[in-house]
Image 1 (cartoon, rainbow, N blue to C red):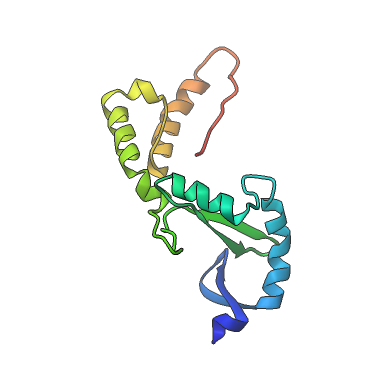
Image 2: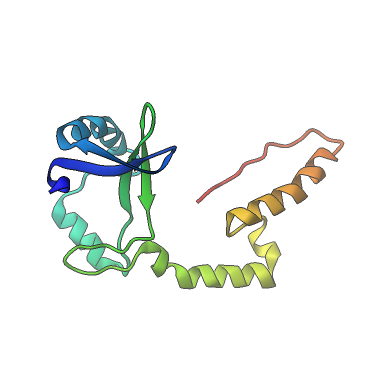
Length: 150
């Protein structure tokens, strides 16, 4: 009954609270963020193209959620959840689990091959705390430092 009239979600910064947005209000709130998605990493596709892409690969796709913030909407792509369409597709994370295990093994046995790659937030601090003193101890100009998150 509630979901037929309201969009039910949490809000960023408001843990353990549930918010009910009338569907007409929710449509107005998300119109701008959805327009921003089109042309960036996401784009509107014909149904036939979507089905042909999904059938050609062994994993599904990420689900996008929109979480309200104080003055904006946060867009979150969740790659953990399997799809709930007519056909069951493994989640992206499940599909990539074996590749992840291979990369972790390579990092343990041959760390020089993956450079400063990390596999979790805890490792970021460890790598950064070892890297920073070396960088500051240089007598030359500090080079540009690039951090890539994927």
